[in-house]
Amino acid sequence: MSLEIKNLSVKIKKTKLLNKINLKVKNSDLNIIIGPNGAGKSTLLKSICKIIDNIEGKILLNSENIIEKDLQDVSKN
Image (cartoon, rainbow, N blue to C red):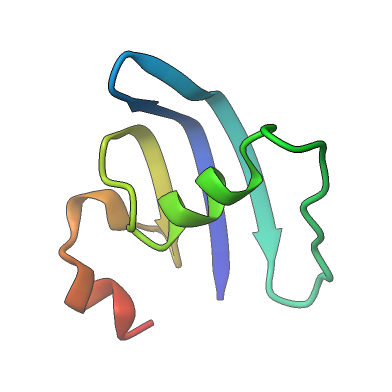
């Protein structure tokens, strides 16, 4: 399984929480998200899980853009 994020931006109300985030995660790697409070760690994870839907960019799961899919299809993976 592979996960790639390209130019992810998240805006809630009028506040931009994430701006043009790029990330590539391989299945065999150990990945850790660290940062200070308010840096956007939870927002990033919520975007990947489709809890937040007001996003721009691409989230590719196995080369498929999950932003364009509904939650039931994404949850199967």
